[in-house]
Image (cartoon, rainbow over all chains, first blue to last red; front, top):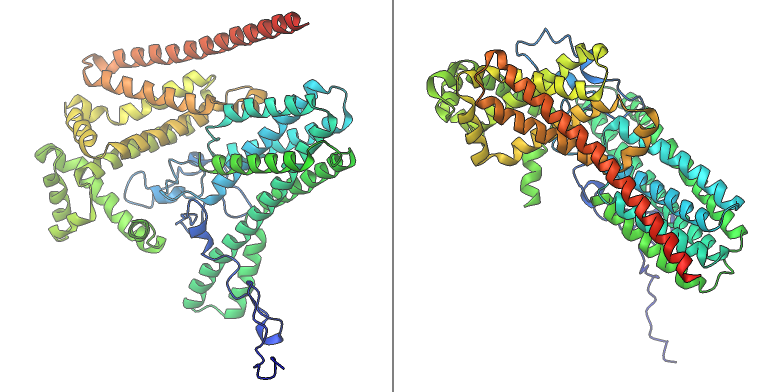
Length: 293
Length: 237
C-alpha cells in the first residue's frame, strides 16, 4: 500500500483563516494587511488635534463668533482657541482626514446616480420604477451636499465629466430597452452597497484607533482601566454618528433600488453578464478617480 | 520618503502645542520689533530668539527662517479679517459686499508694512523661497471668503451649484482679486488707501460681470445644442 508510510499532517489552511479549533479561532493575518491609515490613499487620516473638528456626533457651530474671548493668552490671534471649527483657516492641519475623501466620493456618486436616472427618465418617461429611484437619489444627494457644505469639503473636479457621462449612459441604456436600464441600476447599486459597507468598516476602525489612543493616555494618567474602557466604548458609539446613520440609510435604500431593478426583469436583459461586469468596472474606476481628484 | 515626512508631521499634539505657542511668540516679536532694524532677514529672527532667552541654535526650529514669520503674519491677517467679518456679519446684504469687506480687512492688517515701503521686500522673499506655502495660505483665505459669500445665494442654488465648477471658479476669482489688489496697494500713495478700495470695487464688479457672461454663454450653448439636435432628428426622419 503506497500510503502505509505516510505521516499524517494536520490539515493546513491555505487561506487566511486558521484551521477550525477553539484555540485557533482567529485570522492568520489581520483583517487589514496594513493599518488602515496607511492603506487609505491619504494615509494621514489622523487629525492631530485631540478634539478634531468633526469626529464626534455634534458638529461644532460657526467659527469666529464664538472665538471673541481669547483674552487669557498674551498673544493676539492665537490659533489654538479655534480647533472646534470646520473653517480651514482656523483649523489648519496639514493632514486632512480620510472622511473628507469619503464624503466627496459619496456626493459625486449620488450626483452620478441622479444624472443617470434623469437620462433614463428622458428616454422612458412615465416609468414608475425610474421615478421612485430618482426621487430617493435626489434626497441622498441633498443630504450629502449638506454634509459636505457644513464641513467645507471640496467637490471632485470630475463633476462635469460625470454629469455628461452619466446622462449619456442613462440615455443609451434606456434607448436599448427597459431591461438594460434596470441592469445599469442593478450593477451600480451592487458596487455602491459594497462601497458604503467598506466605508462603514473604515469609520469603525478609525473610531477604535482614536478611542484606544485616548484610553491609553487616560490610563497612563492614572485612570481606572475599566472606566477608561467603558468610556472608550461610549466614544466609539458616538463617533461620527450622523455620518454613519446617513451612510447606512443610503446603503439600505440603494439595496432597495437593486431589488426594484431585479423585480423589473433586469436579469432577462440581453448580454446581461457583459453589461453587468462592464458597468461594475466603470463604476469602480469612477469611484477610484473621484476619491483622489 | 513618506516615513520621514510622517515623523515630521505627526508628532503628537501635546508636543506640538508647546512648540507652536513658542514659535507664535517669536514670530510676533520679530514682526513687531526687529524687522524694522534688520529688515526681513534671519537676523531679525535671531534677535527675537535672543530676546526670548534661547540659544541661537533655536533658529533650527524654523526651517524657512524669516519666511515662516512672514507667512504667520499673513495668516494672522486672514484670521483678523475672519474675526472682524464675524462681528459685522449682520450688516452685510450681498456676496459682493462680503468679498470686499474681507479682502479689505486682510489688506488693512498689512497696511503698516506697506506704508513703510517694506512689504515688497517681504513678498519678494516669500516668492523666492516658500511660494507654495503662500499660495496654500491664500487658498485657505479664499475658501473662507467664498464660504461666507455663499450664505447670500438663494437656497436652491446653494444646493444645486455646489457640485458644479462654481466651487473652484469662485475660489480662483477671490484669489486673483486679492493678488491684484495687493499689488496695486504696493504703489498706492493716496490718503487712507482710497484708490486701492476703488480698485478692489472695480475688480469685484469685473468678476461678477464675468459670472453673468458665463451664464449667458451657457444659455447660448444650450440653445445651440437644442437647435442642432432638433435639426438632426428632423433630418433623420
